[in-house]
Length: 202
Image (cartoon, rainbow, N blue to C red; front, side):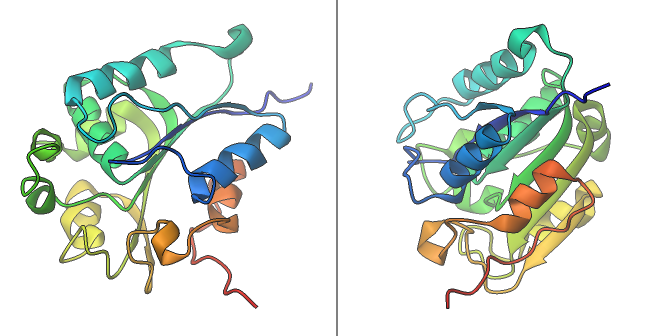
């Protein structure tokens, strides 16, 4: 029997209009080329987002079954989208097979900005995340300016998340050099793959 390629939902962060140089854009192309069904939507009002609107959009994407296929559902979140997933999990309105949370900003940082203050995570528990996904992985730089103190300490340990810390990774965005990112593609294809730094340009 031929296995059904996984179905992927890739979710961007604040002020992100899916630039071609972003690793999520590259990832969507690579997964599509391998026969997977990929949703990489432009979420509404990325400069001034509404938490409930984004949660409802994510819930809708996960409810739809592409072509009626019973494929594994995998969610890849970057930055603000990771905070959205934490809220949605706490509300019990989403379910996936695997989730990757990349560079979640801290609640402290989000509260400094009126546009995204409502996205500051609060009250999410390991039980919420276990109900929302079979497995949840966290990947974050050890020097992310949007998560002072480190996501491993703020999110990884309290939530019991399997965590990959990327030395010098910053916010793991194009400004930090994260266009093509082979280890994220590797994890999408095989959950045993660890998330590591992008290759150093020659």
